[in-house]
Amino acid sequence: MEFFSLFSYYHHPIGINKKTKEISNFQKINHEKLDYFNIIAFKTNVETDSIFLVASNLETVMDLALSPIKSRIIRLKYKLLEDGCISLEVPSTNKYLCALLPHDLLGFGRIEGNRRNIGDWEKFRLKSIDITSEKIISLSYEVSKFINSLQNESSVINLIKSYDGDFGSYLLSLSLSFLSSDSIISISKKLSLDENLRADIARICPDDFWATQAIPSLVSWSNARAQNPFLTADSPSIQCSHIYDPLSELGIDGKTVSLAQICNYHIRKSISPRKELSILTCQRNEGIYLLEWIAWHRVLGVEWFYIYTNNNDDDSEYLLSALSQEGLITWINNEVKPGIKVQQKAYGHALNILPNILDYKWTILIDMDEFVIPNPEKFNNIRQYFEWQSQFNCDAIALNWKFLASSDVKDHDIFIPLTQRCTEFLSDAVIGEGTRLVKSAFKTSNIYHSNAHYPVVPDNELIGFRLTDNEPHRWNHPPAGEPASPAFSDYVMLDNIRVYHYFHKSAQEWFWKSCRNRGGDSTDMGADFALIEDGWIGNFMNQAKDNRVDKDGWVSSFAARHKKELDALRSIPRIAQAENLVRRKFSTRMQLLKNELKVKGMQNKLNEKNKDFINMIGL
Image (tube, rainbow, N blue to C red; front, side, top):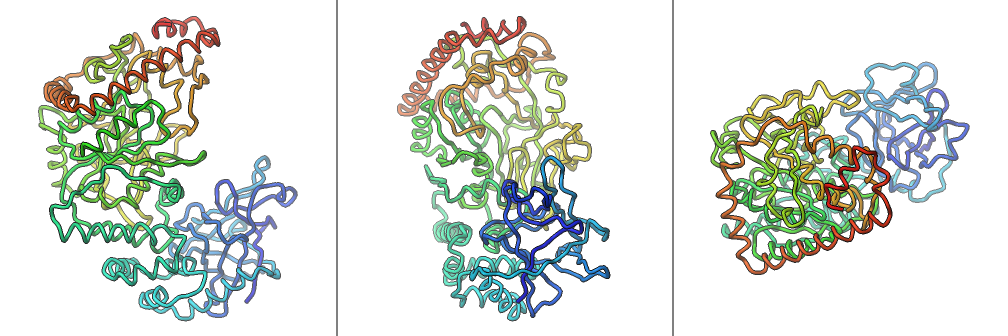
């Protein structure tokens, strides 16, 4: 077995950036000061045109930018060139690796895997090294033995059943670079049908939660549902523990790091839903809006809510608990550590681990200040819109925002529903390119992961993504400085259905939002006055009195039904009691925040125009 260090054509050492996890090359002069892992390359005697890469610590998941590759072990094709250098090629795409020159200030440049031709930047150098790590040596021999036995998917099944070493997850990840899509789907089906095979893959991949948690719980739920068609689809409360923290990153780019991960996706894709429509959301310190938001979407046809929360300190947990105990929502407590992308972890958990959500054909992914509203002249409720949409070949729908201006309310008027007190639209000029941002709805079982604006599927899958009028969703012309992505639509379509965005609400609520840690912004608790400054307060003041174009005409069509549903929810004693606790906490905290703001003299930081904001919050 031969082992090597890897260098670019310009003799820059290649390693893994600890911050980004991307394979990069580093300036030789100061690379030792940079935070990175070494890469170990090795060849085998079995597949002589391949080279294999692992991190020196063996644990790091390496990301090859602009390629489908993300893994703890990477297989690349290599070719010896006339000048003694080598080229490195991604097997699944036949594209070459390229080493961008290290940036003078950063000290590194990433390696990219999307080049079609070989120039100097696409050339690499190998330097033989001695390896003392027994684990790396053992892994290299396991890889050689595995490749020697690998002929088809049966070889992978045999490995799962019989392997008794320490590198099962590495070998199965490596198999992804050899297996066809059909073979992976076939293995997925076998896993769904064979309990012993599921136990074996969990045994040899003990650190892979797709193998140990996702697939077993999914199959168990699916089997129970098949045996009992009246089985309740939803659990009242669930814990999303720290074990799933990697889901804040893994899968969000469409890349696959484990065989069990992609098999779990295909098993989920095979589930047939029994119901139509659910909402998936994240919530933090937004308890005063919770009941209105749920009542609105319930009366317009949403059947269930999956609500992830973390670190609430506004007493909303009492209301969430009451709603879940009444069988109206599933409340998922999302345990998070600093640095974890809270929303992405929640969406990853829902779309990888949570089986119940698959009982719903469509999932809408929105926030607590966003209300989905169908055109009342065309649709009596949201579900009617989705029934109409289902006649087309469509996996996901881009829903455009319509922004509502703030209302001028004081004290307890804040508890008047947003849909009643915020009734004027903002001019698009106030929002700018933000009007092109979309939220999404998607066929639940077809999705791998999601970020806040659009769903993700595996790299080799295609998705039918449409606008709300069934025209294709295109994103060829992003705003200046933004990369092209499905987050921004080229065209804004608002005729059939919209997401009303109650972003500004009122001056008092803007103040509350500015001072309270919320959503995915932080895991910190307590007050923070960093946003009491001209830039942020100016955003509110810019729309507070001017820039209003017309009044909403859609909400009133559903107002009577909404009020009836909201009254019905509030007639349930423990829900009413819990909402009162949330309101009292809000009022108490609001007064404390105002007092603290006054004591600290934070209002003196604002310019004359924005000082009106202080009067608007009643200080």
